[in-house]
Length: 190
Image 1 (cartoon, one colour):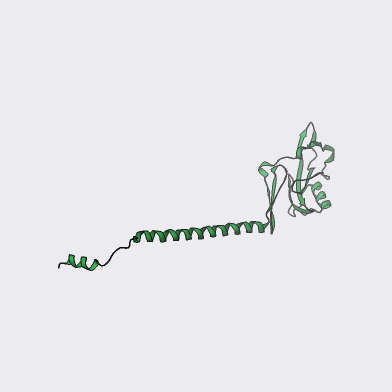
Image 2: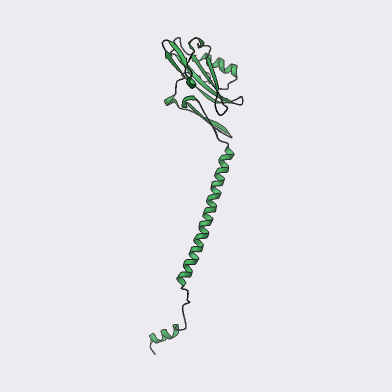
């Protein structure tokens, strides 16, 4: 008997099952893939839930000034105020030697209501229940030398604000006496 016959005889007792090993392996792999995908989906759902809980816990609230001039983002631990200085919308127009306040579509002649010591003050309540205080005052003798400010408060608490065209001193006061007078009268902290 040669080597070839010996191999045949030795392996003749071995027989393949009716189901091939390849099909069994593929079935096991498919089951593993389904389990892995299920685990991945559960993890993804958990991450999304945690993100939702985190955002909700932070109580993020946004307030917007008139004309797209300002955005206040409030968090549990503070707030961020952004002023869009590249594109400030002016609250007044000078026409025929008179000053007109134009916020919210108003057309109020405020020429005789502004000075270097007294501001014109306009308030309105927005759809979020936030009170906007608009101030306009002079920083020079002519009407063209005006400055303005907008401050927001909610529930009696000041939320943020800005002033434009006023010089701010090292102690955070301004050279606009009308603005400093209004802040003192209204307990505005900035």
